[in-house]
Length: 509
Image (cartoon, rainbow, N blue to C red; front, side):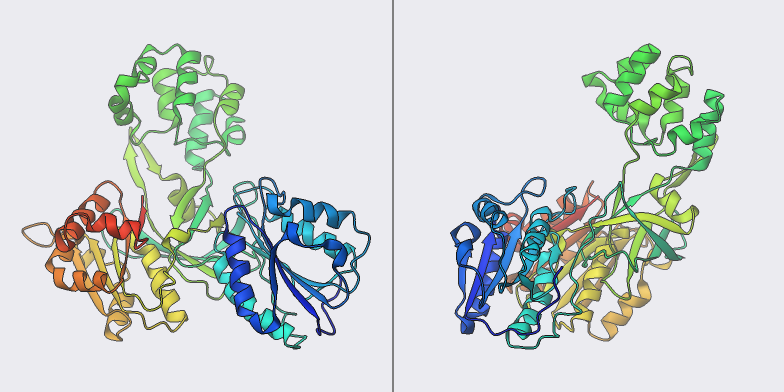
């Protein structure tokens, strides 16, 4: 890439964009409004005359990528013309790319655009931005630095590197596990995990999710090898999914084994019976119950099973010191004489010193941009995780937003996760309200929805002032119960109205 500029005077400022969903267009229009003193022209790429670009021009390019790294439709003609242009010497530019790390060719078009401009002797004002779905955070950092450069501060952008690394299940980052700390004294255990992501280039914000690519339980792999009478089964199955067995896998096992019992369970009208049978079981159990090693050859089983599936967890922190926190519930039990561990929690808590991970943006659970609107945070059990992250983000940004938190668990003495931190925030006024529901401490069970209704006037006032409600916990009962409580407090249809206004944010598992 060409060096960053040594001079910035310009005669024409173009803000070009290419957009499929409208996000890049919206950012371009915002940037154009912010740069009004420079009289920018805001145009789709295809409306820019490439032949006219040259000395005295600055092009600020904001674009998404379409499909597998292709330009959006309103940028195709521009890019084709650009590639046929031999030189653009004298042009200065900056590229802000929007992408999705879930796609293999992340920010493919804007990377190609940056390379094409540089190859034609155009000079970059700033390092290219590769942003994911959480692009707003990068834009907020990029915009003021760009302004400084345009005003003549030539060194402002030298150290600004805003590039998300596109990790995924096939190239996850090996994060060192710095801390495993138990948060409760009852079973099942809840744990705080601290991971080191230094050097990863991963960018996240509170509310995002961390995907863990787990290691399979060595004891389970050895037991499968014993069942097959073949020690190579450990290596053959180490990267296969051994717990979450799809109906397609089960149907093929039934066909290969000829098991009438498994075939019966797979009938459409036996869904409840199948779910009950599979609860707590793994591949070895199904093989022992319905197959023989000769009927299901090891090589065929490896082909049949999907790759090991990542498990997703809400991040329990705000980015700080290249670290990331999780709050997880341990899955550990004994069944049929074998001790079992959750695939991911077993790996995280009882495996090695590293975990293979990658982040995914979750904009629906980010803090709202609506100024100082109050927040009502409701979490049960390890559903406190993303709420801790949101609180840390508010603190890091010195935001004085009014926040009320309702936390639910079984016993105050044994299960009050993050008690000291929550109480400290409340004492210092960071939390305007801290309310708890410990369902097993009294004669009658009290849940978070009951606490909401007990504090109806307060809840009604928060929502009347434009408040946002964040809800995280077990999906089986939580959303329905809280929905009923909000409707009881605010009137029938209040929950739906809040959802339609974008003021409910749910993370249920």
